[in-house]
Image (cartoon, rainbow, N blue to C red):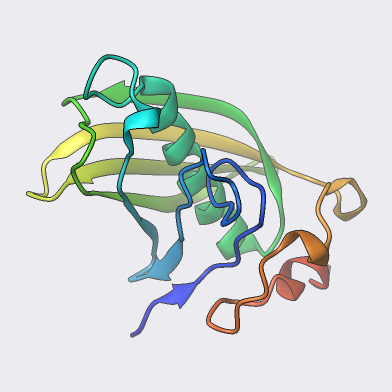
Length: 162
């Protein structure tokens, strides 16, 4: 099974291709999970050489959002995020974000995520809860997404049935 590349926007701090200060992550659905390669830069640091915990939480939050959005084909807002930091995350190293859809309780999607270093060691784990947005409340239009024929069409999220 090959990976399915997920849509991304121009301006988003996490996935925005045109945001020079953002993370510019490209998410993919692969093996029943959402994954992204993460290469933190010096401007993402808190302490010298160490990535700020808020940046790590943000990356995990976005990965877990996609775990819910990809399965349910709709947009969500975060309502709860819990992160446990296990190892330092350093500038100049490569990491892998992984997120999974766990289930749904009273409309709220439950997800879990993790950040692993190149050696496969856990650096952070997370759990999240995401509430579905009404289609008319999603503050994005097709023009906000990058036109990329290699990704899943954002139309699937705007024209879902039910």
